[in-house]
Length: 323
Image 1 (cartoon, rainbow, N blue to C red):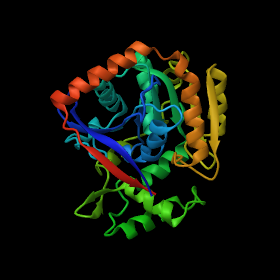
Image 2 (image 1 turned 90 degrees about the vertical axis):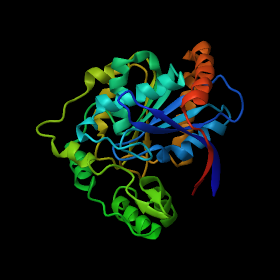
Image 3 (image 1 turned 60 degrees about the horizontal axis):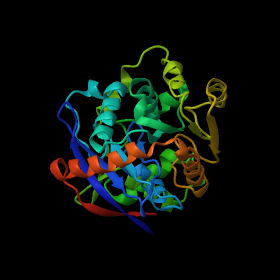
């Protein structure tokens, strides 16, 4: 079992919701670019625990921040399900980064988090300096979206953590064939929240309504993606993905002069960012792009973050087990 220290961050969005994030502090002082991690549609900060631990304690340690957008993980649910929309969730990310004082950051966007990243590049380009898109691009395959719509809000809440691991195993058997029972148990801890020692839903079930109202072709986000042309981008694609096609990745490379790619074998949508090869690819990408990060915004971010925590955010250091 590996453990890592992280600090809980609670802050208030501009429309009054209490949102949650984490801070994995760099283990030694560093001028490396800070990283902000944005999770998938029904996912949360826990998805990034392994890679955040690695990036904050590697050969070039860096601060890593993770966010539970509204209705996910430990963030408050929104009373209006229509607010579970990419533009509003992008605003949550902006509020989070503004509160931290972080600019020119590295972004890891998994699935929905990658959509938020693309829209963010068009709306607030100064907030990001390099981006990892984890199994997401400007074109979303309808087959993958239909699969996701089929389980969001419909996965039974398990009675025990053993049941939770079995549910995860069933859900992931086709696209993640190499995962062990131990992996299933670890992913279950990411997917579900815990209450009184038992698993409970890790997201607001009303998120399903966002998918049920989709009608007609899914909009393509090429203009938003091309807003990233000024910064380096790494695209991770699960070899078994049904949401991001190889053809889309190829076109992304044709349109973006600073794009690099990495395929994760034996994984589907979205790669778990737990294997050593993928983590090394992400770490190398950010190390190579650090030279473009300005030192002064990073240091300003550090002092601003500390002052805001004292005045507004209850903070506790926690340790989480990771299989």
